[in-house]
Length: 110
Image 1 (tube, rainbow, N blue to C red):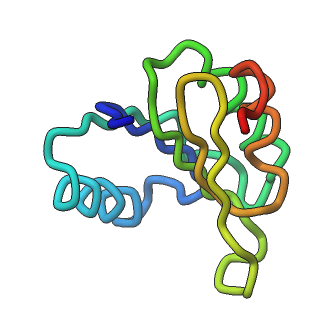
Image 2 (cartoon, rainbow, N blue to C red):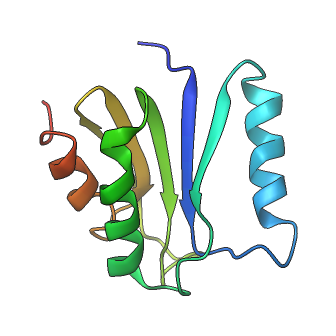
């Protein structure tokens, strides 16, 4: 399935160019895709806060790829995961960040 929307949730903040870089990469790889910024103001490395922000928002968004990055282990060997839930995909670190959103979207699909 192709998705027309990408939602982005991070702890990057808005004081530098990280969010703009993310938008730029998305625009270069998929110029027709629209981006919804859920939040970039998750307190640094606060997985629980990021998980709740995404879980509270995702059910109200169109079918999307939901990208979330809130990870105290950024730059380590931690793997990323893709979770199929509801009518979307959740993409992020394997640290529990995505599970509440998967549940809010109706649970993980096999």
